[in-house]
Image (tube, rainbow, N blue to C red; front, side, top):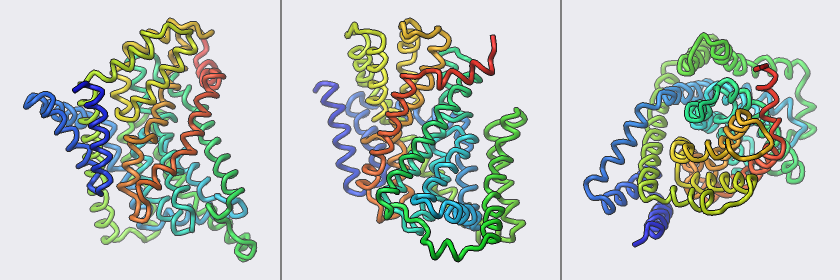
Length: 447
């Protein structure tokens, strides 16, 4: 049997087992283990061990339980209710206002954790139940949370850009600055899409009626504004020491937890029952995340062992002597294809030794050092798209684990389609206008 046939068999088996309702990490892990044993015998077990070691050494993952716990504390103590009540009142006349507020919240989360999984954890525990309770369309809101959480790997401090900086030997500071404007641009495009879509179909994101808005006094609006700004103050307390260099990413996540708990204590909402519920839920969700990521790494390792990724590289780059822009587009397409079954780290480690030197030699009208900074942002946006594309987008399966039973896997797959289109539009805009990413680094790092 050819490697291509084996790869197709692995994917079809995974999708078929997912349809039976089995746990996501169990399905992915089972297919990975079965394929490795059938292909390489007992020696194939080392792939799973290596994946586990890689996961255990992923230091930024320590922020995951911190942000999950913070999200549960905000939800269980109703601190998030104040924030979403504020958005619902102040954005009341705008259809989809609460979804727009969720995107803004995700931008703040992204500016502190640098990981998509942490943003997904907070968005799913805070935004998802609140949006469902407000009568928002289930497909719309699952797409909003998944797309918004993907901003975590583009807006600094991005862990993905740190890894790219190590491999491409580029300054991390310049890469982080290069990701700010594209990240804000993409968030703005999400907001425009939500506003237009809900403007045409108001039932997807119902706004406050005129009677409800008239019943809310100006004093009540100001009170809600003060109460709703508390989460923003918590985010600022995490972000300020990290941006100024006083704390690391993990230390800032601890500050976020302590600040959130402190705010709940001041409001007299942090009880023993709340603490127990948040702790148990955090343990369950964190373990679920760990199992899913471990299974995904094992699956990607098996698929890489088949040599399929190297074949994609050779086909798109080495065998097609095309022009520089055509090669660049084909490279991005290859990332999109690989992103369906590999994580962002695996994609970067596998192809960066080939792609980075190749990009540096292409005549794209930019200096060599600027090309590599710009391409780092392009790669990161492509990773964001890969997070949302079936059959193996990380955020799709994580959303399935968080979502209530009424939201099916089909709903989750359909929900991301328009947001993937928006991301592709952002990628095209950035390819056409590289200065969107390069302007800010050029202003800060003056030669």
